[in-house]
Structure formats: C-alpha cells, structure tokens
Length: 269
Image 1 (cartoon, one colour):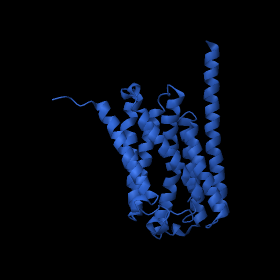
Image 2 (cartoon, rainbow, N blue to C red):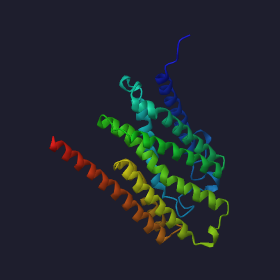
Image 3 (cartoon, one colour):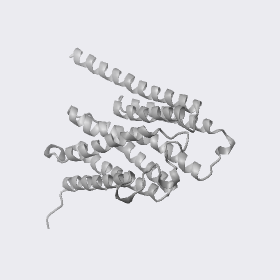
Image 4 (cartoon, rainbow, N blue to C red):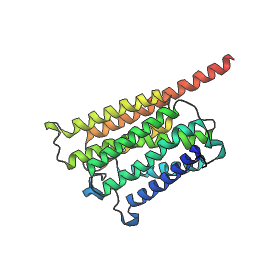
C-alpha cells in the first residue's frame, strides 16, 4: 500500500478549504439563495446596528482578502513550496481559517449570533497562531511577502476589528443593557483594547504593515460610520480614529527601526 504524501494532502486540503470559503462568501453576499450579511439575523450586523459597526465600504476589504487567499492557494502549489517549512507550518492553519470563515457566514445566515461569536473567536485564534508562525521567519521574496505575509496580515487585522463588531451585535440582540453604563463607555473601552492589541501585534510582528493597515482600515470606517450615520457617537468616532493612528503609527515606527537596524548591520560588514 502506497504511503500518502503529507505535503500533497496539505495542498489539497488548502484548495478544498478555499472552495468552501468562496462558496460561503457567495452565500454571504446573496448568491445561491443566501441573505446578504447586512440583512441576515435581523440586520444585527448592519453598518448602523451598533456603535462598533464599521461603515459599509469597510467590508470591501474582503475582496482583497479573498483574492489573497486564492493567490496563496496557487502559491503553495508551486513545486518549490511543497516541502517548504513555512508552508508546512501554515498550510493546515490557513485551511482551518477558511473553513471557519464559511462557518461564520452560515451561522449568521441561520441567525445564530452567539454561535457566530464563537466561530469568529476561533477564527481569530487560528489567525493569531498563523501570525505567530509566519513571524518567526522572513519571506524569501517580495512575492511571498505579499501573497503569504500580506494576505494573512490583512486577514488577521480585519478579523480583529470584525470580532468586536460581532460581539457587540450579539450582545445588543440579546438585550444586554451594559450594566447601566452608557454605550459610549463600552465602545471607547473596546477600542482602547483594540489599540493595545494592535500595537502589541506591531511589535511582535516587527512592524508588519498589512496587519496594521487592516486594523486601521476597520477603525477608520468605524469613525466614518459614527460621524456620518446613525447611531452617531462623537466619542466613539474620536476613539476609533485615535486607535487607528496609534496602531498604524506603531507599525511604521517599528518597521522603520527594523529597516534602520538592518541597514546598520549591513554597513558594519
């Protein structure tokens, strides 16, 4: 009996997971009879549902993420990548993330908001694990940096913001009153946590810009949403803008230091 090739199995699993992910995304935008996410679950995840919901244009980042996942799937099929230690450490994790992505969409379609929270939290943990793994080594080419590091960075960055909006939507739908505190107190507190997490990821990831850019993108659209549409909230808009600036600024600062340190090391040789 012929022994299965684990690398080939991983490549196939990533490809099948991509198909599942794309089908799920098509359902999420209303294709195949599905209800668009903004309208599913009674509109709980619409752009005007909570203070932490980004404005509608923010969700266009998904098209970039999905394009990146397609590129990643094609990249990992290259002969040079089949036994690449980086792909061996990431492939199964990326596959799981894509299945979880589809599961999240289906749970929202079914109106299971608290299940969707559990799923997106699992997705977040999965992407953090991928981040910790690919941060341990550098891409060997600019193509790999874009297709692998860039794609997974955008994926994690956006999910970091989306999980907050998802939890806020589920709590509101359940009738959570905030223990008597004003909604702005909660929104500002959550955004402060996002800023701290974003800065920590910037430091841990040596200033990876795609990750910081995706977080800043989501936060910036929260600012737009709370400034230009109901429910309007000046404190939330300001907090989101400040958080976006802090995360992006931290990533740029760390990246600049890494580049300067590398240039200094090269010049010393």
